[in-house]
Amino acid sequence: MCYSAQVQADYKKYVVMFGATMSIRDFYEIFYRRGLDPKIKIPKAVEASFGDPQSDDERAIKALIDDFNDKQATKFEEELFKQRKRLADAERILQTKPTKKAQDDQRIATDKG
Image (tube, rainbow, N blue to C red; front, side):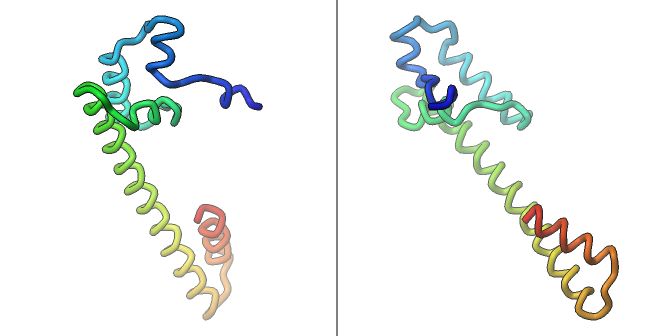
């Protein structure tokens, strides 16, 4: 079993086992900052621990997680659309006149898509 599978990321279990060094407000702050800077990485297991919110603070964190996931999904869908358009354009050009650029665009769009 890999290390990441062994890590317990559930906040409530962490509080019971070790005593919390992060308050629920600290979690809110981290998720809020991630909404501003998507480069901040948070493990899915930590997000999952707020999947069934019990308090108002947990519901606020869940709302931040859902908002971030919606923004990411939109971003990925836009990128996928760009790559599909690039592939279609490259294939159209290749049907009429094979060019190095069209071949490269086809290869790149296929790899990214």
